[in-house]
Structures are given as structure tokens and as C-alpha cells.
Image (cartoon, rainbow, N blue to C red; front, side):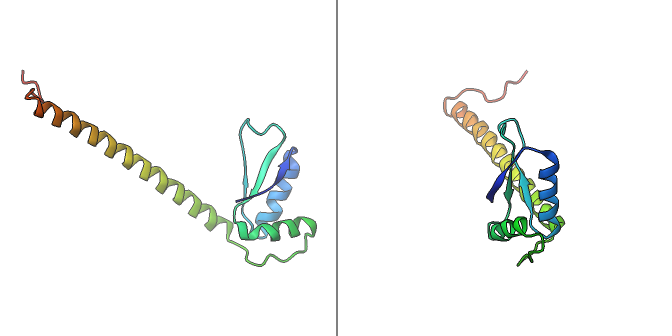
Length: 117
């Protein structure tokens, strides 16, 4: 992902985003309160940065390798969900290992693991 610029005005940000995405260049807009000098725009695919700059300078520029934006966004969501699933499984594994360690220490010390009532 390469930094394209900071744009204060919503209408200008939207115009740039619409232009680039209509030509097959996916754009990411940094959101949040940590960008007081305007929201930062990034070109998602590094190889398309030169095309994005050329397109902003000349609206008739022909993009070399346009991307289907819908497929790109779907792939990004899938990747994000896969990462979330991986982290959740790691957290579950960590909890299971901690539980196994507690049971092993209790067994090793001869303490009852489960209290029978």
C-alpha cells in the first residue's frame, strides 16, 4: 500500500476515490481521529501507484492492469476473516494449553483435579 496524499474535503476525497476505482485502482482511506490534517488516501496495490498518479494528472490516462474492485474487496474481506479466525484459534489453543498446564501441575502435586461433592 502506497501513500497517495491527505485530502481534507470530503467531496474531493470522494472524487479521487471514484475516479481511481472506476479505472480499476483500489484505494484505502485511513479513518479515525488520528488524521487531523485530512484523511490519508492510499493506493492498495503498490504496482498501480504510478498509474494512480498519472490518472490524477490526466483523467484520460489508460491504466495498465486494472483490477475488478468488487473482487478485490471480497478478497480483502476474506483475508481479514481468515486472519481473525487464525487469531481466535490461537487464543483457544493458548487457553487449552493453560488448562492442561493447571491440570498437570495439580496431578503432579497429588491434588484433586475435580472436586466431587
